[in-house]
Amino acid sequence: MSDVARKLIAVLIVVAGALLLWISKGFYTDAEDARNLTKDTVAAAREREASNDPRLKNSYKFERGGWAYVHLEGDPATIGFQHGYLLAPEIEDAFPAVSTGMMHSTKRDWPFFREMARVQLWPKLDPEYQQELEGIVEGLNARTGSPLDVYDIVALNAFEEVPDYYVPWLDKQEKKANAPNLKSPGNCSAFVATGSWTKDGQIVIAHNNWTSYMNGERWRIMFDIQPAQGYRILMDGFPGVIASDDDFGINSDGLMVTETTITQFEGWDPNGKPEFMRARKALQYAGSIDDYTRIMLDGNNGGYANDWLLGDRKTGEIAQLELGLKASKLWRTKDGAFAGSNWARDPKVLKLDTPQFDPNNMETSPNARRARWDQLLNENKGKIDVALAQGMLSDHVDTFQKKIEANERTLCGHVDNNARGVAVWTWGPYYPGGAVQGKATDSNMTKQMRLVARSGHPCGDNFQAKPFLAAHPEYAWQEPYLRDMNAGPWTVFGSGEPRGTN
Ligand SMILES: [Zn+2]
Image (cartoon, rainbow, N blue to C red; front, side, top):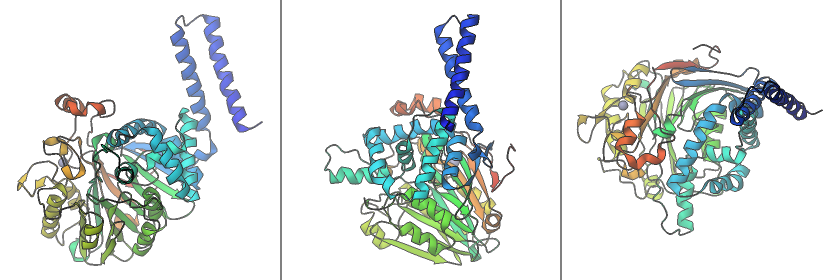
């Protein structure tokens, strides 16, 4: 008898038992109660059965400081199964929120995204990542019976690149009338520094993730991945997604990685490979800045175009890879600092890939934050360490108004605080978005595979959904998914944290 058949029979026996109990005792007079009991019994039996799956051996999950930490270990299919199983509740919570956001902004339905994932993204994925994604579906389904299939999960993995890069490109190709005004997102504030800029002369890297609160509230997974091939990874991430995607991660060969997106980037190459796969692959397999750059450029599709900030703790060298589609540029140094706040700076990238972006308008969020990074990094030259980095990620200085006010121009973003919104990203007035969590590490911590992270606004402020929605009914469509975003404490995480500690 096959495993599946055995499991099915086991479930049926439990169901039959429950029904017998119901009939014999006449305990439930209400048919609704009986149906719920049956459903609950089936679900409990399924979950019990799945929890005994040998593929879950060596994997585990615990909650700390507002983060869900998962340790995944094994071949690609096994890592995927563990991911899908351990994070099933988080995936089932995140999927409706993300897919609703994708459909709302693009005015496309979900079958459109599934079809795009099936026809265009899936065939371009390396087999090991196909296996991992199939594993996620299998683990998720084994635990909850979720109807989500692999194309739903691939579309979820592409939630940064398809709605804001592929769709506007497609709308243009199709000369679509009344196409929505879609702009590449402005995600994140980050820096990397080394040499005479830091306290110990080694690398310091830090990043806060800017996104809608609806998505950001769910961007609270700490992934410790021990793959059968490639380097060990510690990264923050999103339920059901194989890349960090915001991005912040380190690997066991000493690579330190983050990025901020390029504002007003335009372009898509339908022959390229999905960005989420290249980003995951680069973190898993790159042992140097050169390796990282090569993997990101191989099949560059233009999706989720970023300024990558990199460090190699083995050499103390840092780099900035401005990855446009028509142009790209790599800067590197063993004595300097690179910052990111969603602006491109290479003249060729500016001209060819971001034709609408104005680098001189100091009123906009990317340029105002760029000015603040310049001030902060220069003021603290020679003193920069992880503790200072945490403070920088929490900074509320608005360089345009020359005052302290948590808003869309501050390194710790609070776009919901005022009526300006961020036009260059098509974020409207009081858009519920901004900095949703922060992370930092340095060379020494990376050697020990450790980083420090805070869930929620890096400054520690809390966002409250109910009063916000009452004041801003234009965001009522987010009501089913938007919830309070309370900041956790700055919390240190390492690879192989003892399981079950809280
Ligand atoms: Zn703040």
